[in-house]
Each structure stands twice: as structure tokens, then as C-alpha cells.
Amino acid sequence: MRILIANDDGYLAPGIAALVQACAGLGEIDVVAPEQNASGTSNSLTLTRPLSVYPARHGHGDAVNSFRYINGTPSDCVHVALTGLLPQRPDLVVSGINNGANMGDDTLYSGTVAAAMEGFLFGIPAIAFSQVEKGWGHLDAAARVARAVIEQALRQPPAGAAWLLNVNIPNRADADRLPRQITRLGRRHASEPVIRQTSPRGETIYWIGPAGDAREGGEGTDFHATANGAVSVTPLQVDLTDHSALPAWQAWAAGSAS
Image (cartoon, rainbow, N blue to C red; front, side, top):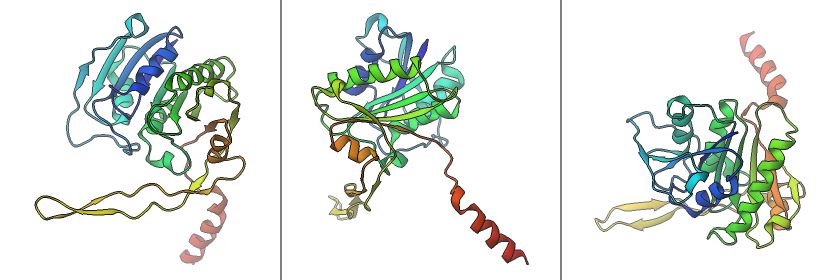
């Protein structure tokens, strides 16, 4: 078993150290992570400049085969690892543990999910792990959840050769004893307004506003599961096609051609 670990909080983040320890003993581990926090970068690849790979000092001993960081995005890290950096293809890609939730619409922006998705795009099973609240509270319990999910997914995968899971873990000391629910993505309200400020040079600058509250967070969603004391496990796919609307659009296209 070979495992590739990435994240979007940067290679020095406590969450990636916890995930490395969670995977210890499961196989050979390689870590390739961003140099700096890259939250919100989604699936972006750096195409306008070259990327550099650096060895990172780490205290994980024999648990890690190699630990490196890249001056790029989470997707860059996994892409470079899979297309030239690693001598062998990993059997599993895991990402996180993220400092904050990646639920509902967040998954479209998330660098944590994107790193796992990059592995999935290459046909490798992948899992993204996040804690619901920021601050790394009870990170040790979240790591135990990650270990249990990885072990069960590898032992009893219900899907085909490649699958992608998005796991959100409540910040609780007993997180590893909470039930795990298979969920769908909820939806959020629109983001809060931008925050307008003035720079020291007198220029108007803007900060992206906070994420909106849950708009669709009923039973069966990731929001509902975590709010009610469960670990949310959401199977994801990449196909964004609106299949239900295809017939209507096909009729529309046929009408415009006549």
C-alpha cells in the first residue's frame, strides 16, 4: 500500500501532521503539500510559472517515506506527484485534515477536496477530511476518525476501482465514537457582502465576505449530519452535467436549427 497525503492549509499545518500519524502503519507514505495556506483555490493548476519542490523537515520518523512541499496549489501538489515526482503510483490519495468544514457549496471552492479530486481524476481512490469548526479542537479524535474511515474504505469499498469521499468531522473529543452517516451535499445561502476597506495608500480594497448559512440542510445532508452529532461521509463525482435537463435542451437546440 502506498499513500499520498496532501492538504490546502500548508505543509506546516497541524492537520496534515495528524493525518500522517493517522495513516502510520498502513503502508508507505509520501507527503506533498503546498508551501503556504491555499484555502479556496479549488482545482486550479499553476500554468503561468514553473513550480519548485522542496524537502521539508518533519518529525514523523519511519512513518513517512518522503515529505515535500511545493510553491503552488493543492491540485498542483497532487498533479506533480502523480505525473513525475513519485517513483510509483499511490494506491490512495488523502487530503486534510482541514481547518474548518467543507460541506455543501464549499466543496466547489475547497482546496482540500480539490487535492483529493485530483487523485480521483487519475483513477485513484481518494478521501478529503475536514473538521467542522476552525481551531483544530480535538484534532486527535478527528485523526482517529480518519484512520477508521480509511481502514474500512480500503477493506470494504462499495464502489469500483476509483471513488471520492468527502468527510466532515465534528470537533468533539468523542468524534471517533460518533456514528458515520452517508450524506448528500447541502446548499448554502449566498455569501455575505464583501468587506470594503481603505488601504494605507488610500485605495479601496475588498475582502471576500463570510460564507452564508445553510439554505438546504435538512435530513440526509452533510449539514444535518454534523449538526446532529454524526460524521458526514459524502461520495462525490466530477460530472457536472445536468442530466435531467438534457432532453429539454436537446429540444431547444433542435428548435433553433429548424
